[in-house]
Length: 160
Image: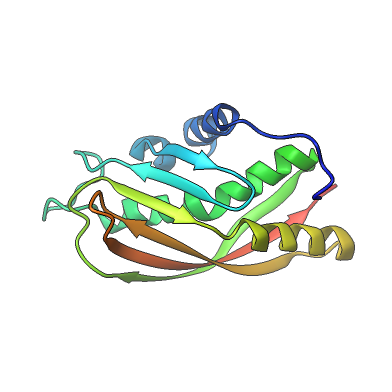
């Protein structure tokens, strides 16, 4: 995979995220996440604190936090799918969350687990089987304080 020349642009990935929210997973479209950055190792996604994402305590609703973790944890699969020009079946098998403090501002979700996703894709190509990998996602507020951490179990299979 490291020999691949094809790269994806952030605009392409932002467009794919928009289409995913529009046609496949409406809750993603409802929360209106913004892809801030993505490369082979790292991803940052922002969800604004607004009427759609607030709870009764004026902090981000835990469902909106879960959407952000879902995107930050899973968008690398779309990134590598585009680079490799392969179809990949992907889902989350499990999630463990720890909510550290109330998210009373916009939240930035980050994951630097691209290498783990790449490993899973390579293992699936070699074995032809579904592969499970655990990745970590961190959610921070605008003051760069951790508001939540997520341990996500990804399940993927390259369909070639």
